[in-house]
Length: 155
Length: 155
Length: 155
Image 1 (cartoon, rainbow over the protein chains, first blue to last red):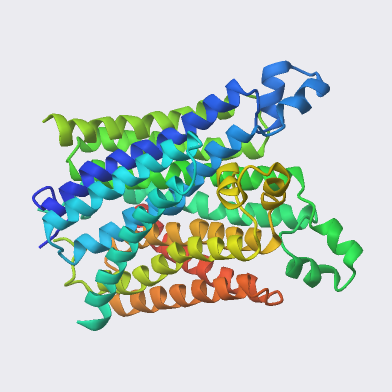
Image 2: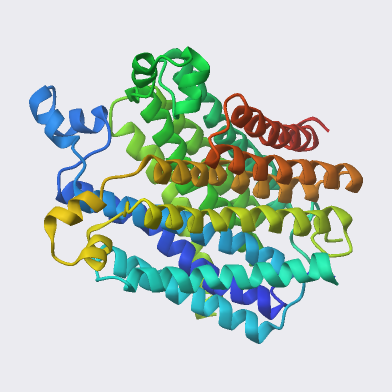
């Protein structure tokens, strides 16, 4: 029987919390764009041309990366490095039929820690705040992987 | 009953259009490599050593990033930030049993907009061309997420 | 009938080898962090503040990127560009019911080539070692995509 159906509470938990963090991740593009406009810091020549026309001097200025744009970019990159693996690991984890209550708890904490991570990163909250929110998500990924290994290699 | 089977037209649409954009995404590595060779702009010391031997002067020159290489890299990165979430969102979306005709339409438009995005980015087409192709894919991701939220939190 | 169950040997192969490379990928964050600490090369102001307090001079020094940190970052990025698509392509590939023995072989070789890739990259092994390990994984992705295309567009 398939476990990837809306009758399985573990999979429903992925629908609920997975969609939340995918939304957050997708929204990071918008955050970066807003910072690019606010700080007048663009990516490529076409963008600069669209903003100030053929003025090479002004174009050059627009193509310098503002620290806040870099920060938004790095927060987005950190999401790719953590949320995407989480999702793939979760699919494998659900397939080995974990306890649904525990699964929902793990997914809820992961989603919460990653949403906090973004606020802490973008908001320049002092360390170790960012490290701790990262660590929380990281440990959940490792925990699920260990359970998968036990199922695949030990049992 | 499982929805992730070749009997479900929504999932078949993901097989058809998902494989197309995954192919396009995977090919971006090749595009970047070709530009690296054409513009003689490499990534790391070993690469430079392989190309010109122990000549430190020549090695340094090879390790300067050419704008076209950077452009290909950024187009690839933009794919990771948009196509990967699309795929994961689509899996959740298919699980809540959307109308197959609409699903196929969304996947087709998404695939088209992302293929166009790459040509526009690599081809340096003037803005807002790149922005519009990005927006199209972005809105499809958001639309699917909203439908998932409605299923998970409202109904 | 669903193919994404632990009764399907092709899917079990994804659980076994997919989890291995996801573990390796997730661990790249730790490798980067270790290099950051060893080479005293951090990402953002808060990190530098946490390490040396308000000394602006010392902070600036800490924010210069060490080549080995960059190398670990790029190895991680290369994983995102190759392992994530592999996983998504594999899901589609499994759905068209390939021969399980062949599938397991492909997944095993992919996992091996990506693990080697990381050692070769981090260990600065001379080229074309890195290129060959990359090529191996790349070709497996392309092979699976071609089989999916044949199923979706030719048959």
